[in-house]
Image (cartoon, rainbow, N blue to C red; front, top):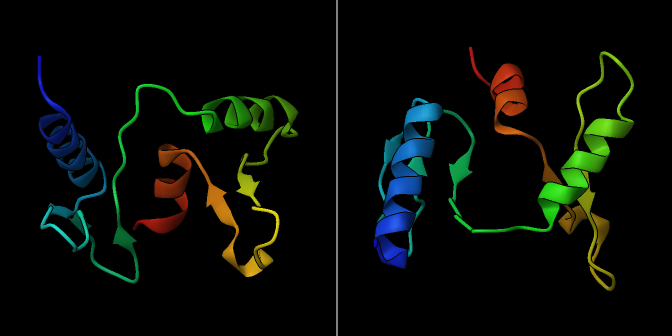
Length: 96
């Protein structure tokens, strides 16, 4: 059974391939280098509550609209909110 570091590396490789990037994976640096303005940090989890949030956003999205989830942490500025979209939707809007 792979350990956490091995699973993390595998996730980084998969994301790099999906985004036409390069796995850098150095400690303290970005995990995947992408051309353009994005810096990519990859996290791999067995379960993640945001998946339920995305399911809800998908169910509630009108036809023709792309679902997204915005996470606001009370006490933080809204400029620090996190925006979550599905990989396939991100790729459609951010790659050539």
